[in-house]
Image 1 (cartoon, helix red, strand yellow):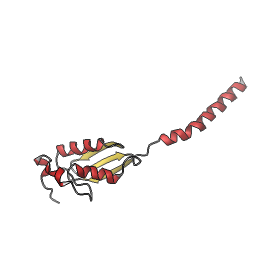
Image 2: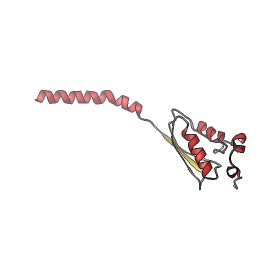
Image 3: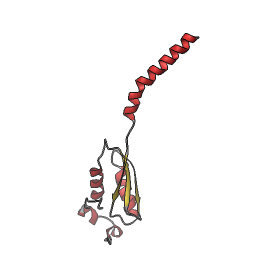
Image 4: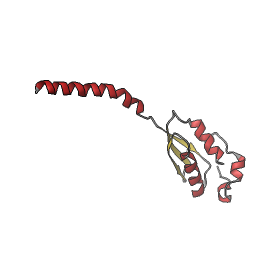
Length: 118
């Protein structure tokens, strides 16, 4: 009985040490970044959130209409913050220092084209 318990303990420890590196590799480090946008309304919010969620590596995107900031949780191994800002700009919105794509901006609904007062 004592031998079988010792053997089981040994097997358990062996499995633990063998699986630990595998499990550590699968741990995904996600970053949450906040980006200032030029969004105005609920349509802007929906467009930006859904647009970002289509990008591989983006786990969540939530735009606060009051602050006009979008919080993006993403995997930096799959996408960079610069790429996320470019994606927002491609939708027709400013994203921090990245200016909106003018063609995409002109294609937005009229309410989304209202100029912001700084």
